[in-house]
Length: 156
Image (cartoon, rainbow, N blue to C red; front, top):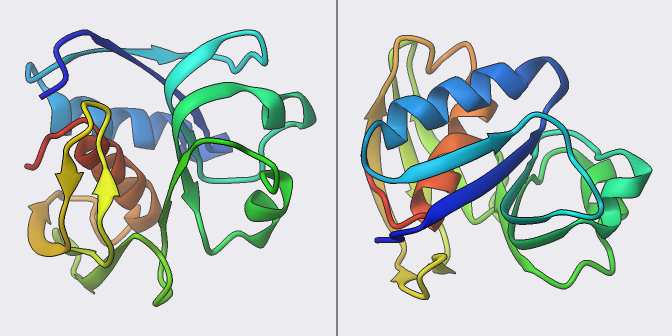
């Protein structure tokens, strides 16, 4: 498990607060983290979460891991030359993290291909359930938060 402070920035328009709430719920007291209010090309982030296409200046932001909504093709286009560990989430067979089942209060998360965590651990393919009263309403935001938790070596 990562022991330092994890610096996370989220680009999700209206969904930023929802992703942040899910991250706080998943992380609770397990690790220390800092959620950045605004993105800066000058700052280095441990994790950059993109649920929508980032502003122009963010495509050059430094991050160790970038978590992107693979169902929004404009995100992938804006990050063509990005040199980072990219973790994708969404509802297609090529994403790293997807949902194999969604109900109003539960999501079954499927890690479809291995990924590397902040601490260098390999997260293998797996499926597990995550309970949330908003699982059916904010599925993309929950997938982003769960992907972030996996990158931080946390599993709910």
